[in-house]
Length: 285
Image 1 (cartoon, rainbow, N blue to C red):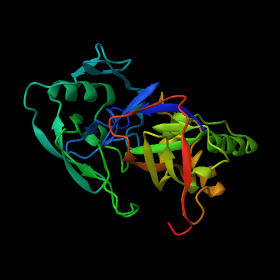
Image 2: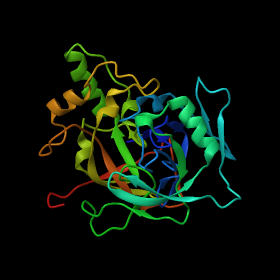
Image 3: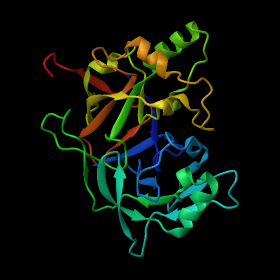
Image 4: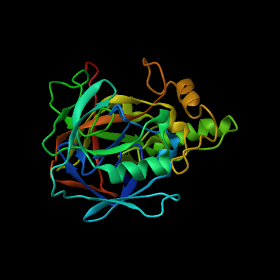
């Protein structure tokens, strides 16, 4: 089995970046969900509320995060290294509260200009502090300790090409268009074996890197949205079809992909084309 895609999403819910090689940190891939957009209440904003976030192009250069938009006269450039002491905010992700560094009024003005004022609120860009730790929920862990940045809940999202092929076959049978893997915003895409076989995997990795697959990923309406325009070409799809397929037996809802944590390999990297092995979940785990 080989890795076919590696992706990071430096700003939560803006466009992703495809990589040939991804460096691994304690929180996941380097710079993945390292920034986030918040409203006046310091609550996270995503494509669920603001689909046009998909239109913001994201680039990472050696010195800076760069955001671009067709309606912006100039790109927004955020230096990766900050010399000044940035104001700290308490921000909310779902029910969690954690600290973040405010990227300032220039970033706020740029985002508000290109994305508007959802609910009348200005938008701000915040960064995950190097000295902050955000622990992953323990409910599905096995006494392990794991952390993440501004991701919804886990360090990595793993998906399979075989599973996407099965979903697209069902969509075609219904007279609907296929969907690309980008709809699911994965970090790691593998060739896969049988469709949805990943729900039985316990670990994924090689001699240097080990990931523990710990929780199926329940999907929201973002997967109905084109990840370049934010439009939803076919309302409720592929959400509706995933529910019909019952891809995660015993669980209610639409599931695609598996949430994973880092077990070993901090400081290492994964590359597209790398061969990876899987171990299967025991019946009692």
